[in-house]
Image (cartoon, rainbow, N blue to C red; front, side):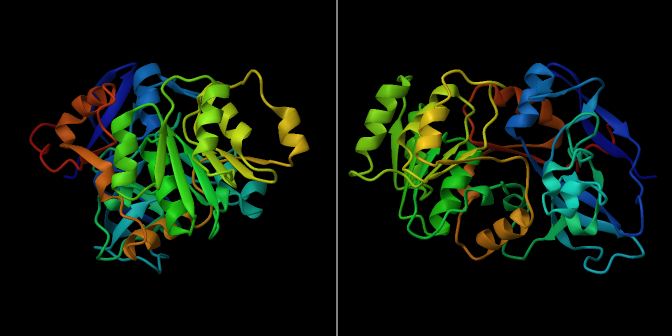
Amino acid sequence: MQNNPSVVLRGTKDIVFENRPVPHLKDPHYVKIAIKETGICGSDFAYYATGACGSFKMEKPMVLGHESSGVITEVGSAVKTLKVGDRVACEPGVPSRYSYEYKSGHYNLCPYMAFAATPPYDGTLCRYYVLPEDFCVKLPDTVSFEEGVLLNPFRRAEVHCGDRLLVMGAGPVGLFIAGVGRAFGAMKVIIVDRVQPRLEFAVKNGFATDYYNSDNKSTEDLAKYINQKWDGESPTVAIDATGAPVCIRTALQVICKGGRYVQVGNGKTTLDKFPIARISENEINVRGSFRYGVNDYKTAVGLIATKKINVKPLITHRFSFEHAAEAYEFFTQHKAIKIIISGPSSLKSKL
């Protein structure tokens, strides 16, 4: 008899292992995946630490995880593009096929989205998970399961060849965005953070061309020093991956006229001293970024497969499934860039 060991968050910093029911295919277009690797994301940690992430709040125990890859073990009768044994990355959010957002090409904004490890939906940190076939991206032989979990949204910035890119935050998302910016032809990529080892890591591993340590500076001082990095030219694109007010205000202060600003990081729901006049007078295009957009996953897999970006250095720590609780607690120490938890291969006798 199959079992489905799962990592369940019952409350703040309260992780247990449970044997959940093995999921069945919901319709003929679904596939079942044996999860091999899962990454810890900032949103996972937010639920672990506080029981909430932004406007989403836990009201019952929830299986963690949404950045996963695995192997197809079962396919529905209508599945045409995948077969048992295929290696896939799991895009973790399934929208309503009838919503306005889905039909207009913005399915990530669907209000009826069933997103893994977002209340009330369970996540992927388990043995088996099911998805529609078109939300599974086949991994080429040259892309590992670990690389298959390191896929992040990036297309909202529309980085082009010759752009000057400023990235606020050198966490996994910020580093990935910086690396993709370079792959898309950004002429200069400067990354800003207050953790010096991460900044050095970014340049050493080719994610950025230069860095600046924010070191708790004010918006005015930070903007002044960042401007000096551009040799008289302002960034054409600025992306905030922190959610920190000082980073948001600084990025909007230094970006060029007509530049593109993208808010990726989540922080406070409101922001004091938002520079509305500067945005209006300089026609700065301000955009939000939420979850994964159309073809984000496929494009990211393509970039990794063709060696346009190397995400392997981002993985700094690995934990076995049975040590998932320790992995989340280790995350609190801020010593890791990306933590990967392997699939539940050794728990048959325990659950």
